Image (cartoon, rainbow, N blue to C red):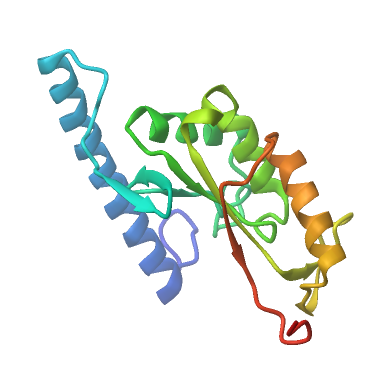
Amino acid sequence: MTTRHGIELNRRGLLLTAGTLAVAANLGVANAQATTKQNASDTTSVTEIGRRKLGSLEVSSVGLGVQNMSRTYQQTIPTRAEMHNIIRAAFDRGLTFYDAAEAYGPHEVERILGEGVQPFRDQVVIASKFGWNIDLETGERLPGLNSRPEHIKSAVEGMLKRLQTDRIDLYQHRVDPQEAD
C-alpha cells in the first residue's frame, strides 16, 4: 500500500510507524508532565525512575540502548548532535545505564555514545557486548563467533578507544563453542 505522500507501507512498516508514534506521544506527555513537575517544585530531578543493583554497580531502572543511533530502521542517518542530545536528555532525566555493542553500527554507536557521555562519564554505567566475529579494522561482520583471547583483547581495546573511556563497566560476552576452555 502506498500513502498519499508516496510512502510504501507494509505490515512491518505500519507496525513500526504505529509503535514510533505511540512512543513519541508518550515521550511528549512524559516530557510535559516532567516539565510541569520540575517547574512546580523547582528541582533538578525531572523524574523518579528508580534504581537497581547489578552486583556492585547501581544503575537507573531504565537504561538507554544506543543500537540505532548510527541509523534507523528506515535507513535514515540521524545527526550526531541529535544523538548526543538524546543521550544528554536521558542523563538529565536520571538515566545512568547505557548499552552498546561492537556489532551495532558496527563500531559507530560506541563512538557516538563515547562522545555523548564524555561530560558525565564518571556518573554513568556503560554496558557493551562482544564475541561476534567482526573484522576489527573494517567493522565487517564475518560468519560465526570469535572468542579467541587475542580477539577479545583487541575488541576491548577498540571499545575503550571508541567509547573514549578507561573502562567498560559491564560486559556481555557471546559464548563461542569453538573456544570451550
